[in-house]
Length: 587
Image (cartoon, rainbow, N blue to C red; front, side, top):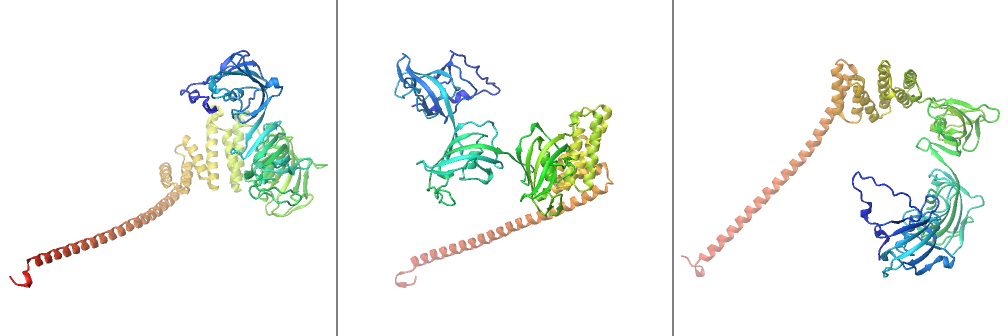
């Protein structure tokens, strides 16, 4: 019997290096084509609609008429007036027919000609034909890729977005055992929970993350993804579930609220209640207008802006005009977006007691801001500015960075320097008289950003920035000095020594570079001493082993000599015995 996997030869997929494989043009009605090297042919009789086609494991519903080449009919679902539903990929009708059906669109009618080895029976030598109408199909997905949770999509969702593990979802479900006994059901309106927190049985979060908004599906859940060998005892109004039970679940993902991990460490989370307009968000340096209600975790309101008679709040992002968590979250919002922003104390008021309009915020409090982005004006991008404006803006950003650096705010200072360098980047198309000034600003900002990286212990970042400077000014002493500092911190003393020597060639009297050179030499001496001790111990161990071997060889040699003497003595005694006269007489 021919297997489905054998129908397409591997050679079909081979291509020569550099060869471009062009897709075939759309098939015309009445046109017949070979769709595999095994002899399977398809003639399009009626076009379908849409772009999607079914996949293996999907449940398809078709009408078909099976005939021999002479027109003899051997089966027809139309005569019975009842379409057939079956699973693709299991050769339930004819071995090769499944490969024809996966090329069809909904509503399409096609005539497939199957060679004998792909027909209804492997014992038959007759070519068969199937006129097939694809009525519909149900998408079937192996969620866990091991058959543990199989999902049939009964109704597609309205969008392509799927929930993530942080998102809050609203679902309806109906759970039954194989015998039809209902063991769990959501109340009217569904149940709401965060995906990462889990719900009902272990496999459910993975199922939900495979669904789209509004999707309805039927699940078959094996025990290992349900309640396993222990089952579930009845308690708190929940019905008992026997051990090793297979679950039949009907589920609907009604909706979900995306939750964004703003800071990447889950200390500032933004749950979107209402999507904003367009594709653009406020960025760093944008002038924003927001309204919000600020609360403690228990719901105590301590501040309002833009609610009732209070005016909305206007501020510039990334300028520390509001708490860090609100600042960072607002910079990710679209116009008209409304979100719940949950903020850890490290991004709020830390361990300080703060008095606000309606309440006191205790030290170490998590806070929640129900926030709406009313409007924002984005900071102009470099490409929107003239050459003079770019240089002017870069100068401003650099001065802002200097102010932050002096205040010990190295991370924010570094971002200012990077932004300033962006304004005067090499592709800024500056005229000759402006390029010199732009280059000086660019180099200065890179050097200052490298100083920030050193303060933040970001040594690879400092090396990268100093290397950028040295690419355009290979003799820049500051860049050599700071890169050498970073190399020392990463343990690359050889590279540090090279940079130090280059810097002293340019400026032999530079006191800071000389101090760094002494430090580098001291560290190198300590390393040499450490390695000398390490290798000394290693060789001492080898000498000890060698001495033991010598002693052992000496003992073995002495033992061999002793054995030889013993053998010689015994031989001499034998000779003496053979030479003695009988009865102990003398010669």
